[in-house]
Length: 284
Image 1 (cartoon, helix red, strand yellow):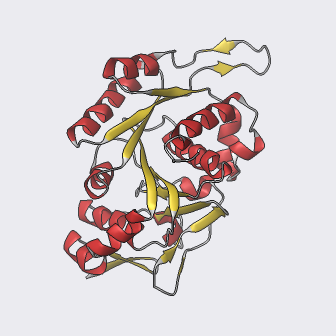
Image 2: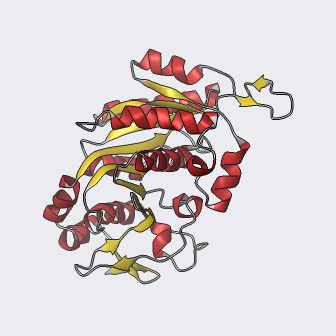
Image 3: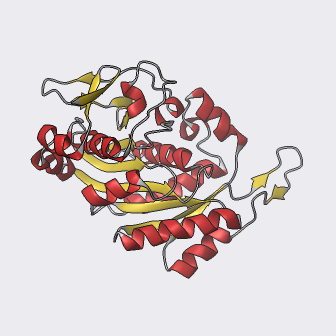
């Protein structure tokens, strides 16, 4: 039996997923994607989804073909942050056509399969496993330079599924400077080491805020904790993303922060991280 999320059929167990989504289809899709990154965090509220969105836009702005896959099944925010509200279509091969944010950026999320965007997704582990498999194998991604995967907080079903079906994926871990977030991010680092997933680096988000009235720099969540944690763990520190209230308004409006505020400190920080990711592509 299959579960239907407002008209789009999703296999309800790993066994059914293998029939509807054979290994050959999964491998064929993955073969067309050069680099895959899972954006993860130890806890919620650290700006992981905004990091995923802005890195994807920054890479697409450099001319790369980019896919952004939202596997935060229970809290899929990516389409709203990008202003994408339409349902997805099927192509001639009965594969889902990802939503197009721009010529270079395609997006896949369970929210794009739902007619009522406020309906809760009430799925157990096997359903999430099957859906994530199909998000890769049954979606017409085409040839991509990068696939960025926005995972939910923690080390549960979704990141574990990615680690199992995409063993060559790399992790980018997002944290904020305060100790409570860093304690959780150390668990994410432990997760990656346990499942043998390469960690590309750590990003310290919400790192400082410059008052627009007096221009005084304020460390609202502390300072330097992410860089220290990266050094202690022996992983790369990718940079600090300052706090910017315009990021909130852009996300709520579904507007690209990168396009509106490219010269901001936040925009430049994301571009610097995108440059490090782009260096992996031969000839660039």
